[in-house]
Structure formats: C-alpha cells, structure tokens
Image 1 (cartoon, rainbow, N blue to C red):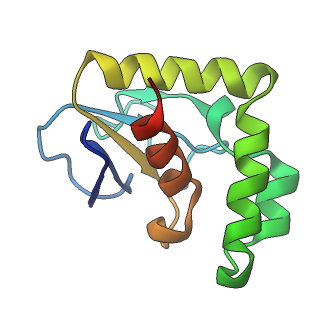
Image 2 (spheres, rainbow, N blue to C red; image 1 turned 60 degrees about the horizontal axis):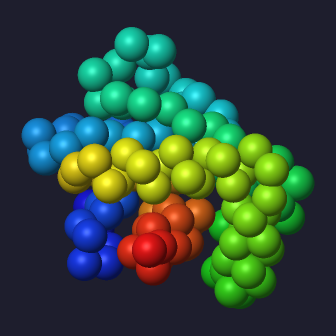
Length: 123
C-alpha cells in the first residue's frame, strides 16, 4: 500500500485486505479475476478512468515504456468519458479518505501512480 500526495490518496491491490481507512475504488477497465461482484474489498468501480485497452496492451507493464505510458494516459484522461470519470474519482477523493485499487501486481508501474499524482495536483 502506498500513500501519494498531501491529500492522502492511497494506492494498492484489490486483493489486499481493507484497513478500514476510507473507501476503496477499483479503477481497472476489467473486473479482477477471482473476485465476486459483491466483494466487500471494493466500494466502487469506475472502469472508464482506466487506460484504454489499446494503451494498456501497448504498455504491457514494460518499465522502459512507463514514462511514455504516463504521458499518453494523461492525454486520455483529458478527454470524453475518461475526463468525466476522472472528475468522479476526484469528487470521491474530496469527500474523504480513498484508496485506488487495481488487480495489477506492479502497482508502482501502473496507472494508479499517474492517477494519484494527478489527483494530488488537482485544485
């Protein structure tokens, strides 16, 4: 589990047990394998804020592509449904402690780090 920014947006894996400190928001485009739809470890699911399928496949969690991935993902978040979904996540964060969760093993190289940074920078 990681904390990012002064606002305390935390990031982690969906498979980790909740610590009771705020809501957990799944921000993956796909529902995680082996997780029931009514799993108590997930309070909300906002798939539209996740990277597009095309970007996700291109990136393939290759560390040498992370900087370019982050740049492309930021551009995606500035448009259409992704922008509306980002605003929804930002509103949840403004309401109180929030942990963004993903099924990805390499959380530090995932879209969560980009989201957490942008949320910390948001006015």
